[in-house]
Image 1 (cartoon, rainbow, N blue to C red):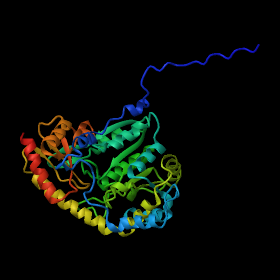
Image 2 (cartoon, rainbow, N blue to C red; image 1 turned 90 degrees about the vertical axis):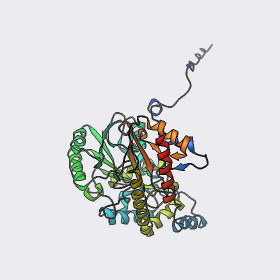
Image 3 (cartoon, helix red, strand yellow; image 1 turned 120 degrees about the horizontal axis):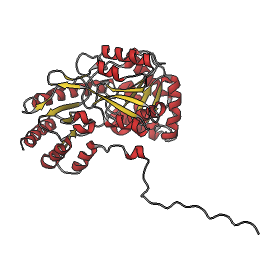
Image 4 (tube, one colour; image 1 turned 45 degrees about the horizontal axis):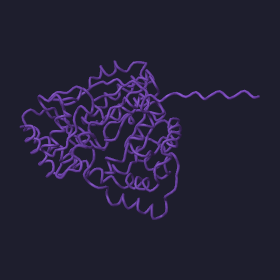
Length: 401
């Protein structure tokens, strides 16, 4: 008689199924928490997200429509369609020096560009240094992969605004560091690295074999004496060394909802990022990429017009903030945000929720960008004069209470 099969071993379920620990440890977006409290309410002025208040220009939209009408609804290359890679290489060459299409990978959003770089370069236990305050996605992305993130905070004073202690940053960049993350011009501060600072950082990272990831989402949004773009590590680095730029169509061409971005880096890294694109999204939609081609090729007037509008808005808003007792605000060199300190405030999440509930004013709490930002509030000034003026009036009423 054959032996009976042993009874299967079962493990009793004793807890609710959850995601792995690194994911559960991620912070929820406090910007979204404030926005959720105000979205759908009539009359709320939403300055909480980093988004232009204008629709994408018609000539960009038409390129996507034409592509759809031509039946371009199929898969395409992981790296992006050749016309867009070529257009981006030409664009980067104009701004930052010789770049070839094999140094470019097209991604489904700027956030995807960042995550593909993280996935390619970071693993559990790696040490990552980030210049903060910083958009929370840039902190949490490495943590998803099990990395340790060390924050090096900018200093702030009412005369100089936000500025970097370069020696403190270089001290933090030890040989054990895998990656440095820099966003310049920065969200939320508008802080912009100068050429001398970049040169010193690049030389230090070269000596120690540290990757530099530059989030260049706001590189075109600069206001004084910077030329067509902010100083970039791409201006200084060879295309075959440990410098990677992640960029997006969202800001410079008013395309936040299109979800299109790109990575510029060493050709060997780009080849492997193509694998990650395959296993994440496979490819960005062809019709979205066709819109990207005309944006890069024909959209310079759009970009320059948007920057001029933002400069006007920045100056108008900061002139009014300067007249409010208890607010310390210094006009930023770049990006699209006022990031100001409110005297006596120690819980900006509570403040911003109260401003939404009582005044219909939607701002982002400083704590969303890290503990060093508590006491600050972010205001996206990509808005009309009328909305900015009304927002200031509501802020005055809210703070008076």
